[in-house]
Length: 337
Image (cartoon, rainbow, N blue to C red; front, side):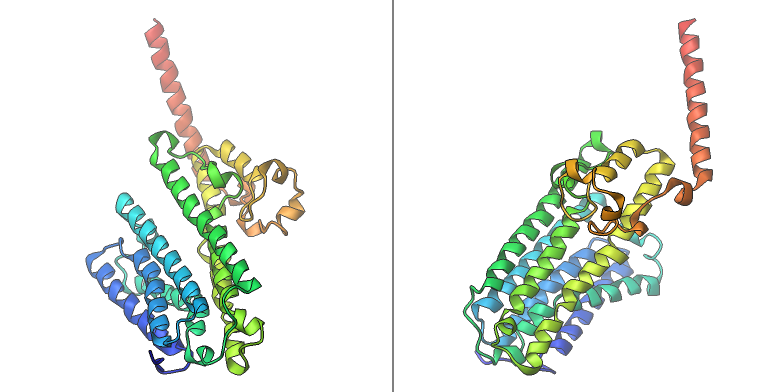
């Protein structure tokens, strides 16, 4: 099968256009029908579409291309399938409560999703492109290939298993409001994020293998190494934009102000690494300076009740609890009489 040259020889333009069209199609449905169930599904399946199209266009289909394309297809399909299943169960996505009826704020999320899909797909997109496939490549099985396969397997299992563990934990009525500290969550507060980061670096590691071993030269060499932007983009996204920043301090603040299992949550954060898996028996003894640096628990994630809590909400809760206690004591006294 002959390779297809579409717009540019790295498939950057065609994949961008496909991503924009794909996301706008689902955006039109989501905005018109106020339908949340397709948002994450559109993101995950877009990776699958890009991998299949670029692999089909390449016309070469060596083992490295097939493996790397298959990895991102498996990852995207599992992620979109799980998120679709979860949103069907929950009914709606709370992230869009202040955007669902506003055209441009809602569109802004979808534009960001376009950028996420296109950027994270770069290693596979460029590996499948004509400017890379024209070079002879080393047989699949180099040290980088094997390391990439091992890392992908570990990351995929960590992300998939942790998603299932958290869903099962939260599905039990007796666990409502409790801290999820089972399975992989014993070792890290966000095993799914850690697994996802590993997955993207493993895909890049396999894609860059031809350049690393000297089989690819010139612009293609630079393009393959530049595709690490995808893994970095996802890591930055999870660590500084839409992942940890939206869960760590805000989650702790909400628990503290509501009194929702705050003590158990506080102990959990003290003994459990924020991202990098580590034995809790050892992590609880790690000096704070090492937690804030080596273990990536930056100050921006840390909740300080004195600085970050809304004292008015706490006073209101305490007043309600005091009134409830007084009412209960009165009822107990009347029952005793």
